[in-house]
Amino acid sequence: MTKQLLPGNLKGNHIYFIGIKGTGMTALAEIFLSRGAHISGSDTEEKFYTDKILEDLRIPYHEGFSANNLPEKIDFIVHSAAYSIQNNVEMANVSTMDIPLFEYTEALGHLSGTMFSCGIAGVHGKTTTTSIAGTLLKFLNLPGTTLVGSGVAAFGGRSSYTGGEKYFIAETCEYKRHFLHFHPEIIVLTNIETDHMDYFKDYNDIESAFISYINLIPRGGKLIYCSDDIGSSDVASKISLIRPDIVQIPYGEKATGLYKIMFSERREGRNAFQLSGFDCEFLLPVPGKHIILDAAAAIALIVSILEEEGLDIDIEKISEGLEFFGGSKRRSEYKGEYKRILFMDDYGHHPTEIAATLKGLREFYPNKRIIADFMSHTYSRTEALFYGFASCFSDADILVLHEIYSSAREKEGSINGRSLFNEVKKHHNKVYYFHEIEDSFEFYTKLLQKNDLFITIGAGNNWEIGEQLIKHYKGLVGTSFLLGNESYRKSEAMRNDLSNQRRS
Image 1 (tube, rainbow, N blue to C red):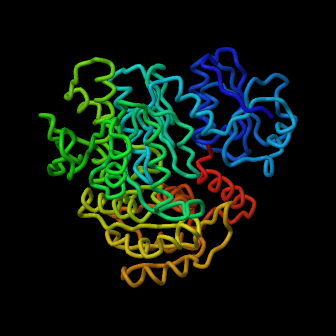
Image 2: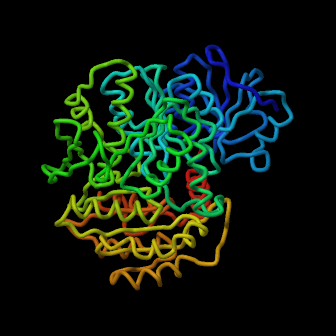
Image 3: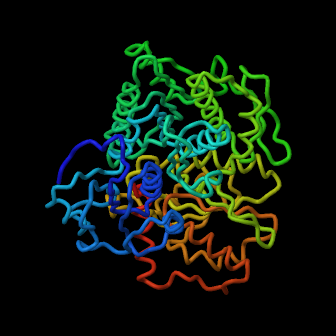
């Protein structure tokens, strides 16, 4: 097993992906394919939305891991962070071979070194910001590539867009300091809060990781940061003392300069806002004030790229492109409306983003009854943010909680789903608890009525209750829940656990 650099020219190289169905892995495979590499790989037998993407790209892959899967000739191997020598037979086999091996974040870092790269970072907001920026990059036909940690409507449901090799916009993750592999010319910083306490020691440790990342920006590079977020503003101030050569661009209501946000009234199902530096109104067809912040960050980034290209800033064109943003998978995702009940799903797993999502929905749909189904992810996160979780659901009319969704990193903790439920009851007068998600199915079929908005929230597997309710109201299933099969449920647990490690 060898460590070396990926070549700048990948044409003709055979790259094998272990865990190829992961969102980031599939996106990276597509980008490498567009550069002339031959791609193959392997993953579990479970079906993901990426199966169809891989089939459309005609990328061959094995379903199920085996030492016999590995082709005779491989130039490089990229593996998901979810797999290691200890838990994957192919990884164990590769460890005995002299084949260059890269974890996903390492391969992403090598790719970023070949382009003018822009990293989107933050505890939350990075997926939506990257999605909007990528949508604008595509709409403006700029010579660039985008990689997002979720499917994007403007990319045909894929997580990548390949429109050239000059610019690269990518979502970069702070967990285990993975983003330190990236080579940024520009960083967008959405926010900094306490999270991932199974890895970081405390908030200062998290902050130091972001400072280290920003310090990678070369002389004259840019930091685009949210002035409305205390964590981002504090880091920007600290960076200005040690790196005055980095150009800082604030955005938000508290910002000074071009990207100060001035909100307008919502109209015709769209969020309206203005930026102080441009004589133009922007409209977003997605709910939430927090989404406007993400849009402002994306606009600032795209304007910076246009300036790098030496092109005129056609703000009307940017505004037009913004309306093509149709959201991204599991981010206030519209799932459909059946029996006049609106179904949505959101990946929110931090109190701040949950509160922002529900507030946005309340403002966007003032006449609907909002029913939220939440499953917390990881014991360490729930314990560290316990009181934040307890009070972040005020904009939901009715709330349902479940047992905490564990991860491969931890199987139990000092608190559980019932503990959270008891604390939430102090702040919310209509909250219910069902240990298993299937136990809530009959409850919902009796509760839901026309003009309701039902949303599943969290990084666990409670999204499945929404899918089953949709099938029920479409008349495709009866009143019994379909997840009784133990082997199916175990495969779903693996699927979600891997997904929550970003399957990258």
